[in-house]
Image (cartoon, rainbow, N blue to C red; front, side):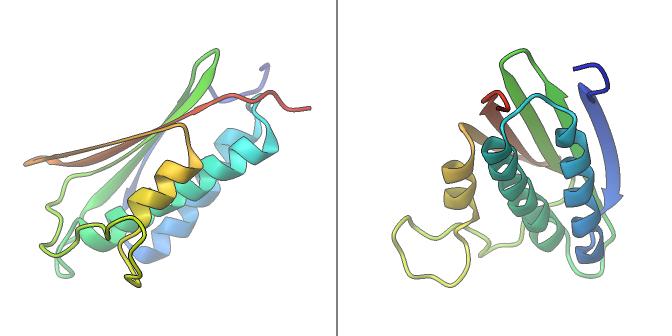
Length: 138
């Protein structure tokens, strides 16, 4: 990992137009790491879901907030943390696994993509922690 980013952090406005920028930033960070392409893509899907949720649900429409994106690499895993400082809207609860709800399946999607997903809601905001063990690139 000579030119790899082993730790990175960025703070962006919590706006839908910024979510794409955050996904591209995560893609760029992950590109230099020794991680298999399939695992990299799964991490990016989970990151995209966490970022979209923070931008859509954390802040009222008339309030500007931020989303923090943090990535760090360990010898055997890649970790990403997505943090907002808002209060999620009532009714923003995930759909039950197997339900046919048109929305609210982000948690299930993230859990299917990466090895570990932890979500912590507090009065100070919400943090989604994602962890994916490295599958060495061929």
